Image 1 (cartoon, rainbow, N blue to C red):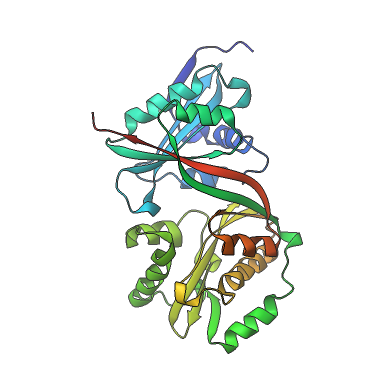
Image 2 (image 1 turned 120 degrees about the vertical axis):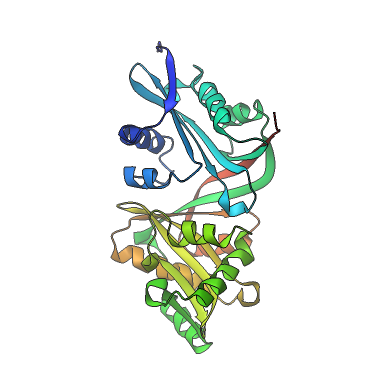
Length: 306
């Protein structure tokens, strides 16, 4: 195919439908997103760029603050080029434009599917190296979820003093939110509390109804959320239990609640990802009926000042 000259420019809201179509065509196994989900995910210091050729969007690039790391000037980046348009310079042009928007020095992180040799080469040529972190992305067809022991597990935990409830049923007092932050940071990192609240409790696709907490008395000991991606798809993420309470089935019970909610709200598929070293979570996901769809490796690069 003969491509016309490539124009790189900032994304505008009028582009969002075409961008979402491009991103959703990347892989049939990727979680589908909708226009509202895409636009609401753009936050302060986010960058969205597109490459246009012949009046059509053929590539998209983005960078977002990697707030969950707790590290300043760390960005999650992604470049997506329509497969027929690969090899014509759109990805390179977008990446160079993206770098011009970033404050240096900074660290960049991206996830590349194992076996995607063109994407791996693209990243390596720009100084990215594998960090050693690998995640398994999985999909659950909600109709096939394995919940046979859900009621028994819930009763056992209740007998042990552990109750699972939605945050919509709980008063979000300052002491309670402080305790919830400690649960989250125990497993997920050192991000500031205001970032955790904005991204985990108030992020796009989230409501208090789809965030569950495991309580021992009034003390939170575990949490999980379900983020709506589209009308019929959602993402399960940030399922965590404090170390002293792990191995008792609490994480599985939290996931049970998210699946039951999905069933009653016409969600057909739930997506999740777990690092390969988290064998316990992988076993829980497989037991619930999740099937692996991809392995992705983190690649990172450091951009020096100047």
